[in-house]
Image (cartoon, rainbow, N blue to C red; front, side):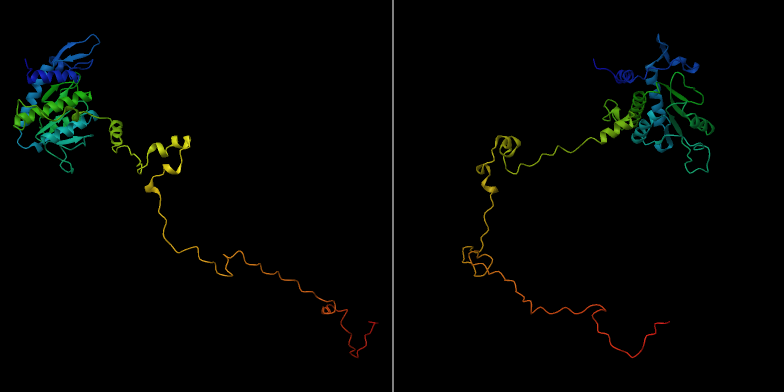
Length: 312
């Protein structure tokens, strides 16, 4: 017997740990608790979770313009799910820190007046809940067993601390909204995988981007066999001339004849008699000119007529 859509969804919620609560329980969340385990963790009734998801989907579909819906998450585990939910349903996402005065201060550039607000955690997103209460904006929130229910109009009991749980809840809510709008047939499965709504660590995303997408490069062999030119051939001494293919031998370029007789006196005629060596010039003793006198001793004294007085 085939399982119904409700039973399949409950199995998926159990696999994503949607039913696991905390060790504390708010008095307004006691009606959604099924039992308490021996370690003190409260177990949420996933049947009531599925019913609240159906109620929230009906409220979302009742709004004509999807741009009037704001889905918000300050928790990092819910930011990816919020962006995907807004992509498929047409709502406006706010992923990250909430700017105070977004719903109350009309002087801000980011001021907006939504008709519906969807939150991930009432404790983390306490600021937008308080501003929505001042502006009479209905609020839908995923509430854990210890979440405060103040100013929350529709609380969906679920585990809002796990990344798989948050992604599974937003995926189911998106599918229910599209089914009620008529985009997806109620008996037809949604082709969007639930993994797209899960939060991924930055290191994991970076590793996937750095994976080599190019196939391993193989060097071309240029038509030569590996066993002829490889290191094995060098070790075996197979470097014979017959191993070289005929295509690799370069044909000689035709040119002038080199058998012509050498030109006499050229450098190419090495049989010619060597030239006689130059003889040194002999100098006779009489033919050597006398050196010119240098200094004051060799110069003759010319009388001038003046007498030198030695008595001074």
